[in-house]
Length: 144
Length: 386
Image 1 (tube, each protein chain N blue to C red):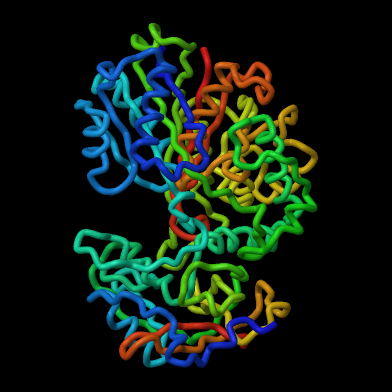
Image 2 (tube, rainbow over the protein chains, first blue to last red):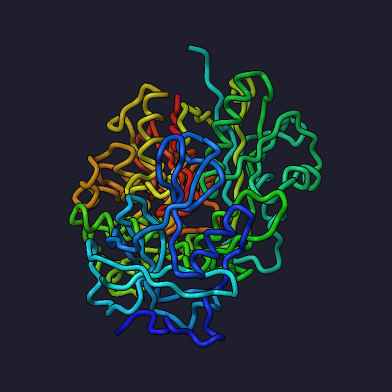
């Protein structure tokens, strides 16, 4: 069985658009445009995800966008068979994933276009993007 | 050393389904139950702890018609009530209160609350700090799957099996068989857990806690008050609190809050894992217990699978847990932390009948609140009899 075959969703199957704040507007716009934005502190050089207005390590106020290559590794995953979320009921089974990006930060996402039986911790992944509204999007991962 | 504050009243509401009750009525009946258990009156209560909606303390005090001089509404999920007990103990030692009521009521089951499978989405609120939920909303994150991420990683790194996780559910169900109020009491086997319906692989239905209505209350009192109460005091020996979270993208999934709160709790009390006679561990899912046992130091990281095998966690075993049947079989109205302390109190009094751990002197309670694979709290507390 292939998980989440609805990657190219009809409008009715759009993923829920995230709530956008002034702090995350650029992040979601980048996602809409097919780029995964991390942040990097100008003072301490540490990279963060999700982006926020102050550095999560030194609390410095100067952080700059840094765009991820989209390459990563599957750290862990769960196959969701049941949900009460109306936006996802039609997608079960779908794969929640914890992905380690090559840039050294990890994030929660979905693995799509992959047979469930082929899922394996350590497998190489590449980012794909899906628009969720006129100015937001989501990053998903496929086998590389 | 001066005498420590103690739990003098502990009462768990017997209901598992109460469609005609409101949460606050269950809370009120539980408060009365704990008060009777202690042999105190409403006028004796001068402190209150409650976790819930903002300003919940104002509503609870009004319903109970008390005007406490100290209160706390620390809200870190299901572990909150263990924090409350320790905060109350500290406040009593500082002279801020003499008898603190900690109470809880919920109609999660009658309200059909989908605690483990509901969506997460950030809401617009000018005073909310939970913006980060937005990063989960496009991906269909549910609570059970956040725990499953940790389970899968544990299996990958250490070779832990689903059968080993199932041992935890089997132990809790066995103990539920001794509890007439438990939601599910018929014995189950490892094979039953394995064969149950998958929810969020690798977690199946019987790896997940039940959803019930329910409530309970505890009264923590000063040594002076405790001397005149109906039962032997159960001392709040101490403990520790922790949180774990995404760490700006640098989180390792097996770095759970228990890894921090457990060793700190033993350090704070001068006790060690081998001193503990029984554990009450928040068993939202089987993996929660596995990671907690390792975090507390009952076994080394990665050895949880071997540790739980062979009946270790069952009554009569080396480290019996969740003698009331736990969240996996007894009750789970949403925030279970208080029930951990209630059962531990009765065990240390020695009055739990068929499920009594023989000669129990020291009990460890550990609560996990939130999402094990994401942000969550961990609170460890040690209780002891004189």
